[in-house]
Image 1 (tube, rainbow, N blue to C red):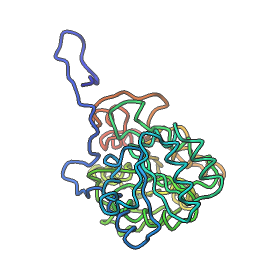
Image 2: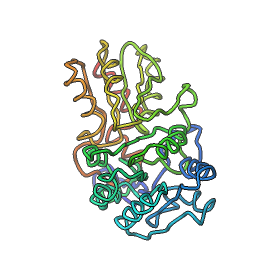
Image 3: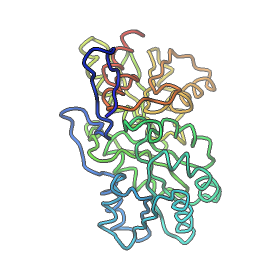
Image 4: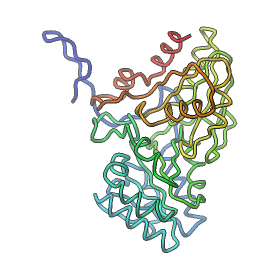
Amino acid sequence: MNSVGAPATGTRRLTTSAMIASIAEEGQRTTKAPFGHALARLADQRPDIVGLSADLAKYTDMHVFREAHPERFFQMGMAEQAMLGAAAGLAESGLTPFASTYSVFATRRAYDFLCLDIAEPGLNVNVVGALPGLTTGYGPSHQATEDLAILRAMPGLTIVDPADSVDIQQAVPALAAHPGPTYLRLLRGAVPTVLDEYDYTFRLGRAAELRGGRDVLFISTGLMTVRALSAARELERDHIDAAVLHVPTIKPFDREAVVREAAKDRLVVTLENHSVIGGLAESVASSLAFARVTAHLVPVGLPDEFLAAGALPTLHDRYGLSVAAIKDLVRREL
């Protein structure tokens, strides 16, 4: 058990679990293992789809595919570099691999294999990284807070950060149909189901306006889009009208949509489950700078530091990713 924010010596010590917890809010609709089921359905239609795991099938929802198509599943053990090298070979032979592990291992440990074996020859290998950003309390060894910054500069790599189960289910076939390499930030387990309420369709490389608003524009990606929508609904009670622009594809980045919406006269808040260095906030800021557009831009993201271990709700409050923290920031900035 890890202690987060414990009081001074002599008072009761509060402890919190560092277990991997659900990111769903209380009472929120969820869908179990949307990635695994989407991949299994796609494989029913496409015999070229294969799955690989670095000994983490259960924890990346790849076990659903393994059970449906055992003859097309490859257990590579705790050898992420070898897994990506093998995925490259499978792609060279005409297959379409989805290779799953934790984001920290796919990006920090196996970067060179992803870059030179997969991206440089432009192979259709789909790397699936679980526990992106702050989605575990196990500390810096498992918190992939800088994966977007690491990968954005890799030539030819498509990067997708889905918000919920709807995004994941629609992204899987889109990534398989895309000719080059991709990286998917995976939300696993009981994943929130939200975007079906907003007439949403995933389109690779395109941002989507989920709601309009005159006072604030949330530009969000990943699980923070769900938080942005919740914050926008709750801010209505304070007569604050907030728009939400969801950016599911980090690369290629939909600069046109971002610049168009950010150019309107309102507070612009970026929200990402990633370091404020090298992710969505800097993508938005550079897009505005190159377009010579001025905006009141405030980033919500993780600090440029190694994060604490602890329970997810505690950590999200501490680092400003909670709905309550988002609302407080908007009230201060307006």
